[in-house]
Structure formats: C-alpha cells, structure tokens
Amino acid sequence: MQQPDITSRDNARIKYACKLAQSAAFRQSEQSFLAEGSKLCLELAKTCPLKVLYTTARALEHTPALAGLDGERYTIADHVAEKLAGVPSSQGVFGVFGFPPPPAGFPAPGGRYLALENVQDPGNVGALVRSAAAFGYDAVILGGACADPFSPKTLRASMGACGRLPLVRVPCLPDMLHELKAAGIACLAAALYNSRPLDEVDPAQPGGVCLVIGSEGQGLTDAAIAACDAAVRIPISPLVESLNAGVAGSVLLWHFRKGGA
Image 1 (cartoon, rainbow, N blue to C red):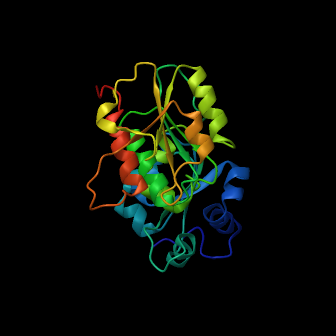
Image 2 (image 1 turned 90 degrees about the vertical axis):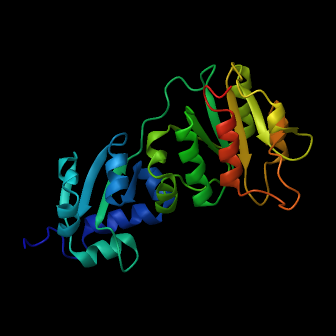
Image 3 (image 1 turned 180 degrees about the vertical axis):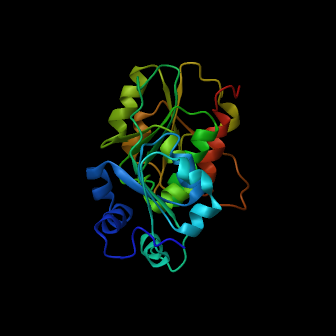
C-alpha cells in the first residue's frame, strides 16, 4: 500500500484543521470549518467551497466519489485521522470548507425565515436548521449566544444543512425582527404566555413569516417577544410539561412551510 502523504500528528496542516474543529473564534477569523465523514463532505461540497480533503486510503477506497471533489487532497495515516476526529475511531474523511455565501436580497418580502435566540445546544441548532431546509425556508437567523452552526456537533446534527441554507448572524435579534416587520414579514414568537394555539393561526402568511424560537431552558427574552407581532404555542397533553426545542421548532416550521396552507 502506498505511504500516506501525512503521517505525523504534528503536521502543520493537521494542527490547523484541529484548531478549526475546536475554536469558533478561529473558524470565524478564517471563514472556514472542518467537517468529518464521507456523506457529510460530499453533501457540503455541493454548496461550500472545499479547500482541503484529508482521507485515509481505506476511506478513499470505500467511497471513490471523494476523488472527484475539487480542492487539495491528502491521504493520512490512521493515527492522524484519530487526532482530527478527537476520538480513537473515525470515518477517515475530513474536509476543510469555506463558509457558504451570505443570502442575497435579505430580507425579502414573502420570505420564510427561522430565527433562533440563545439556543446553545448544538443538537437543537443542527436539527432546527435541518428542518428549516427540509420545509423550504429561505434562511436561518442566529441571535445571541446560539451554538456555532459550523461546530462539528452542529454540522452532524444538521446533516449538512448548515452549509445549504443561508445563515445570518446578528448581535441583537429584536433589532432584526423590527427590520423584518418593516419588510412586511410576520414575526411569530414561540411562547406560552399571551399566545394563540398553533391550529388557530393561518399557515399561509402571504407577506412572509419569521418563526422565533428561544432556548429550551429560558425561552425567548422579553425584548424578542415584544418585537414580534404575536406569540404561538403548540397544544400538547397536560401529561407533558414541554417539548424539546428541536421538536417544537420543527412542528412550527412544518405548519408554516411554503405551500402549507
């Protein structure tokens, strides 16, 4: 078998890729991120620029389609793959990608948007972005202390949707909600108090809609709720106190999906 291109765990390229996986600030400064897995890398390559691909010989043999991707490509030893994965076992495929382009013409009248405020769990952020992509939404807005959409955990939970759906980061979500309302887009907060049951709210929203979802533990801030046009809730059995943020958000996203009326 041919000797791998990279055999040292201390290789500068490997250290750089590891730092991308570990640091949100470094990802932001480099406008790049690291993804693991053949399926995820193949999916991301459709919408994000692939800069470098690292594969073990075994992984490349198992998924020959990887050889057709653009960008630099290096084979790596198994112990180098372990370092990139951060665990003893890995899929043997890692890609360094550039951030996807920002949305054009944002916000657009008639658009469908998801806004998250302080949703810190990577699994919930990834699941919600994946649902938004599945139901035809135009972009996801991330306000406050949301989990980084390009962290390894969030990327895995989104199954690559974080690279397909435009993402908008904002320092103050209420200010963005006011901008959306000025464009004629209805902003609806997911909240319990002073809210309407979901089945009483018209899903069509011809002027566009933005669903606003907060963290599972704290919910939305008072300022975010006040900036919305109305609040909606999902009727559930009294046997259950609440729904997981990813589940509740997905139900709302389905209700207000394009063509859902």
